Length: 127
Image (cartoon, rainbow, N blue to C red; front, side, top):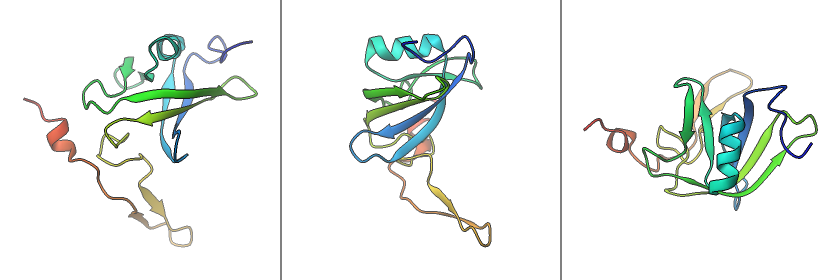
């Protein structure tokens, strides 16, 4: 097999990592169409489960992800993409990473541990 097994799993979890810093930016899903578009375009495309359609990262915000490397795991059911994150933020809430909250294990309390890169109200305004 030379690619993830989309016959076994039509939607495959996709971990996105900054290729330079190795920071985990986000988790999304790819179907076969998103995977092949990512390979052919050089920009990461996902499948949006909420919208039930292809999601070309950055099509609204301009914060695109340039594909640098792509991997899949030993079971062919998880993808890892390493990207150059354009625009400084992967998260729709304006943070560089979607993982901007940390949970204190002993109390379960969470706190925001990052600074916003952009104001999502300005980027995603409905004009």
